[in-house]
Length: 526
Ligand code: CA
Image (cartoon, rainbow, N blue to C red; front, side, top):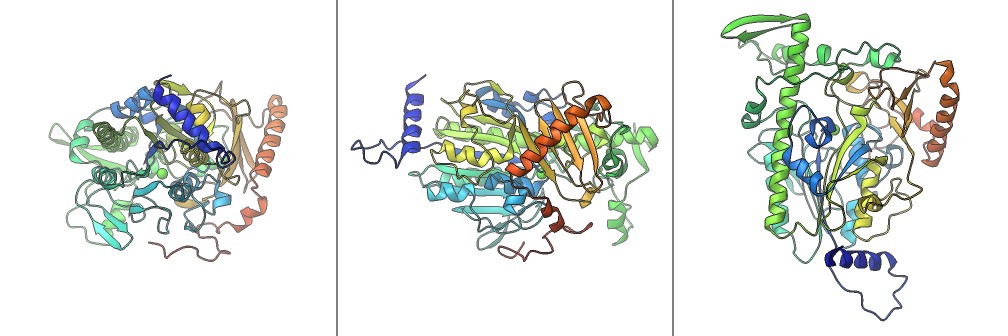
C-alpha cells in the first residue's frame, strides 16, 4: 500500500465519521476528494467489449480501463430500457420509487446523486444523452441532446436555449466533456456524467469507423435462430427480431430516387422481404436465409462501428486526464444504461429479463484503491451506482436509496451480507416492440420470470443453461425450487416496497407514459 492510498483511506475515514467526532481538537487534513468521471454509452452490450471476451470486436481503450481497474462481470439493469435506467442511476432507486417506469418525464425536484455531490462541494456536469424529459437539475453545467438526439451535427439543449454543434456526436460529446474539465474551478473536485448517444439505434457510424467493419463477417450467436420452444407467449409475440423487424432505414437501404413523401418515409419504415445488392459489380437479389444472414451482418457492422468511435473517445478522455495530472485522483467509470441483444434469441433491442439485455458492462478505475486487473463477480445493479459515488466522495448514503455502495467491492472486500439475488421489473407493454410486461428474480444460479398480465412464468437454470433456452417452470422436479424462488421474489417486492396495485397505474396498452392518473411533473418536456 503506497502513501497516497494510506492518505486516502484516512481522509475517507475522517469524512465518514464527521460530524460525530467534531469535538476533536485535531483539525482534519483538507485533502482532495476523488474526482468522478462517469462515462455511459447507450445500449452497449458487454458482448461487444473485448475484455468481456467478445469475439466480435477489439476495444483497446475500454480494455485499458479494465486492466488498470476492475471489471464487473455481473452488473444488471433493474428495468432494461433507457429512460428508467437513467432515472435509477441518478436516484439509486427502482422505477416504482423514482416515478420513471416507462418513458415518462423525470421529476427533477427529487433528490439525485448529482444534487448530493453538488451540495457537498463538487463541481457537477452533465453532457450528452439525458432522455429524461425534464431539464437536468443538480448540475453546475449541462448540455444535453434533446430526446434521443442525432448522430451527425447534433443539437444540444443548454439552460438558455439550444445549440447545434457540427461533427459526429461521439466526438462532439467528448470535446464538450474535455471543455468542461478544462474550464472547471480547480479548487473543487468534479463529478462529470458524459453520456454518449452511441451505439443506440439507428446505428449511424462515421465514415472512418464504418470503413473498419465494411465487408467484415461478424460471427453469428448460437441462438440467432432460437425457435422459442418451451418459452412463454412473450418471446413469440415480441417484435424486435433481426430477421423480421429491422427496417429499411435500419439496414441503410436507399429509397428509389423518384419516391416522394410520405411514401418515402413509409418505404424506409418497412421491413424488406427481398433486397438487391451488388456482388462484383453485378446485381443480386437476396431472399430467405441469404437475406437473413445479410441483415444480421448489416446490423452488426454498423453497431460495432459506432462502438469503435466510443472506444477511441474513451481513450481520448483517459489520455487527457493523464496529460493533465488527473489520472491518480479521478475515479473513471464506464458503463451502459443496459445491455443489448446482438442477435441472441434472434433479437435486437433489450427490455426482456434475459441476460444479454439486462447485463451492463461496468469498468471502474480508481488508482491506489482498486487492484489493477481485478474481476468482480458479485451481483450488482444500476441502483448501486449513486450510493457508490456518494461513498467514494466520503458522503453518507441516504436510507431511501435502494442500491448499495460498491466501494467495499472496489477495495477487494466482499461484505458478508452482500445480495444473493435481485429484483427486476419491466413495464413498457406493448411499447415499441410489443414486449410483455414482466417481473422476476435472478439469483446467483437461477432466474424466475413472471409475465404478470398473462400469469405465465419462465424458470432458467443459469449454470446448466446459460443461454436461457429451456424453460423449466412446468417441470415437476423443479416445483420445490419454483416455490422457493417465488418466496424470494415476493420478499424482494416487499423489501423494495413494490406494491402490486402500482400495476393498475400503468398506462393502457399502446400508450407511453406519463401515467394517466398522475399530473405532469417537472418543467415542460423537450
Ligand atoms: Ca439504452
